Image (cartoon, rainbow, N blue to C red; front, side, top):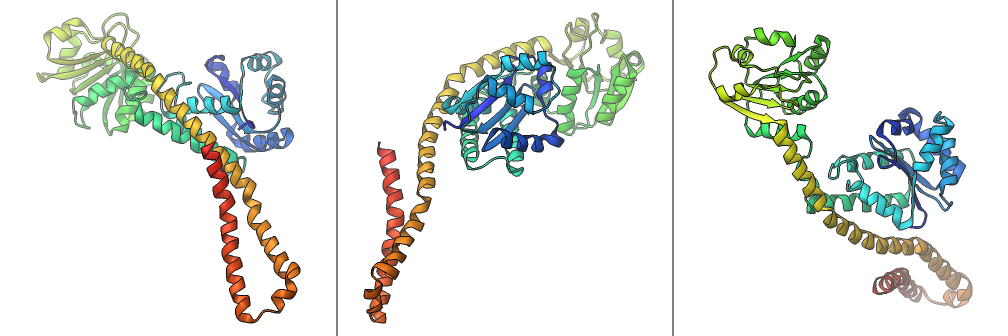
Amino acid sequence: MKYLKVIAFTHKQIELKELGKLVICQENLNDKLHNLKKQFGIAEIFYLATCNRVEFVMITPKVVDKEFAKQFISALNMGLCPVSACAFLEAASIYEDSEALEHLLRTSCSLESLIVGEKEILAQLRKAYENCKEAGLTGDCLRMFMNCIVKTAKEVYTHTNISKNPISVVSLAYRKLNDLKLCTNARILIIGAGETNRNISKYLQKHKYSNFAVFNRTLSKAKQLAADLNGEAFTLDALKDYNKGFDVIITCTSAVEPIITPEIYTTLLNGDTSRKTIVDLAIPNDTAPEVLKNFPVSFIEVHSLNEVAKRNLQERYEELSHAERIISENMAAFLLELKQRRIELAMRQVPEKIKEIRNTAINSVFAEEVQGMDQQSRDILEKVINYMEKKYISVPMIMAKDILVNN
């Protein structure tokens, strides 16, 4: 394991907007990594880039320190100015041996993520490895490490609650909305076309909701979101005249005064007296208190969702010790597996050596005696030798593994 090395640039030391400067263009990624392998004597390598980390995982006997990292980054020709390059190198984290494996296990289990428990990192790790594997950049060592990494992450996500409950306001809002069991053709009014509403729209679209009307101060932004949802677009002023009815309002604007006043709500109802749903993710709320007081409304609002998100996040952090115990157990098991693999590789020559001894015995050392035997005796001798050859090949491997396990 001593040859496993990692150079990591993460959100812990580097601002997210700066990390993007270290991302390698996908078009020439493989060429650059092949050049790095050759230039620095790296046996295997793969590259991981996400929104909050850029990492190089490698198998090499070379000493990987800050000086190595400096030459390594320079060889990538990423166009960094000297000041930026120096800042990145100062912030780099370098791991080797068991620390490198522990870092990769913690990363795959999202313990090192910006948000603990977000499972996307495992899929990103696997994809990064598979891409480099297909490009011929990895080999048997990284294959074994990745098997351990994936196995450990799956155990953590299965046997702990570290990723069980959503902690983003948008995902919590959608979950509450989904609990209401609305029809997929429910009429949904989206007020505001900012990031929050765009994100919740992705959930709605993914779950086959299809009837949208988007309102925004800037009509062009309303049209962009409406186009994604295959819906209609209006200016915010059009709310006071909209009379096509609705089942759900999702609102999130930066207005300092309520957007949904009793007057506008009455117009939107267009005579409908049934209970409606309002998802209000604005701070302050876009919904006037009088609307909630005077009309039957299922109200989902950001303040209560924030409290749930905080509780869920705290529960995730309470699961850390459980996750770390699983990581420790898998590391211990993998060390034994790695030693066994080393024995297997070291003993690959045993069958060839035994065959050489057999051939030397029959064709040289005991050639005259064998030639003097009748055919039946030769056949018996051949059977005996074949039997012993098979046993001699397997016995050393079994004994070596037994010694390793028991000691």
